[in-house]
Image 1: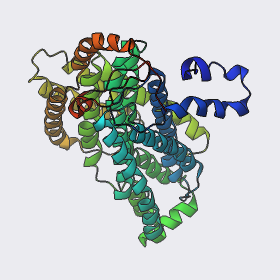
Image 2: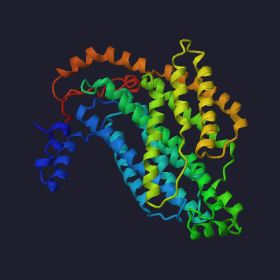
Image 3: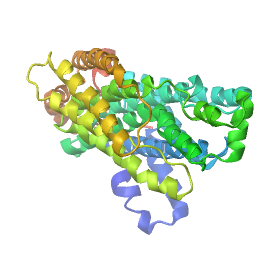
Image 4: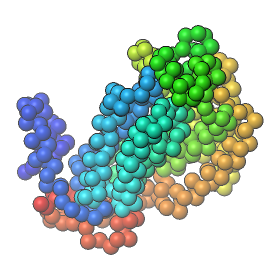
Length: 435
């Protein structure tokens, strides 16, 4: 009997020489390397390994990108800088998982597979474009540039594909409890929130970079400031540092956070379904930023402001879901969330530090969030991507899944109709894949 990843490979590490571990892992994985259509039955141990892989990939990418933005506010760009290398390791894992999903069809339905493949493709195309951009235009400190945007978009598509894959697939396995399903789904949404909010680090670092210049102790190294000044054709003065640090209009920060950031929290609340989902996800992201702040500053890198206001926005989202009238919820929720964003920024600006924002633009953010919130709830309901739909799907498929357990080894639903594969992934198989 071949060992599973849960009961074999991992549990034997303590008694297995390190040099034998790769061979054992290959021995476990090779039988799964068979061509298949997306939506095929996925053994539980393989499903668990695939999504542990995605979590590991996103952890490395987040750590690398967080370090990277702080690095670029201190030193000149370097293609082989440690943050880039750390991010690259996460990207390599993501590419490997993308190939596995695409070739074998395991762990995803057709839509999730397409999202992951397209996301990985966009990300990989963005890398050489970004390198060319830096070669042609020199330093590109702003996180809002087109080549950087492609990196965020590609990562977002990967995350959305992984979210869909876990949401549809994790309910098929009895050992994955309801709490664990919600925990991993919420974790994936926390990664999505980090990715969506990432461009705003430009302003969160930039405001303190400018303040350091005003104090006469700039965080940026002289070589970086001189390079940026030569590129702009200006002297190294405050006007240049302002353009270097805060090139984005003030109106962008709060409007973007209030519409795009809150939209992620709304979608998470709809799909996870737990009462304090949005607040918890915002809290995890803010806690992460609080954790890496002293690590980066202690390592000699510039500090940033932290978006504490997202906690109030998340709480506003969760409170809105207490409104019993579904069609009224987006309006009430938008008012609460935007009040949290702008009110939180006001308090944060007075008590700590906050990036520049335009308080008078709150009606724009409010109108934008109302529209997006209605769109999110409509789309999720139409596509069956709500927490209630997930529970109904799991209950409806419980008895067929029980019958699958008694199927003979090698039984497969790869030949199932395409429409069924698109709607939901096939139930978990307990049989081993055939070579």
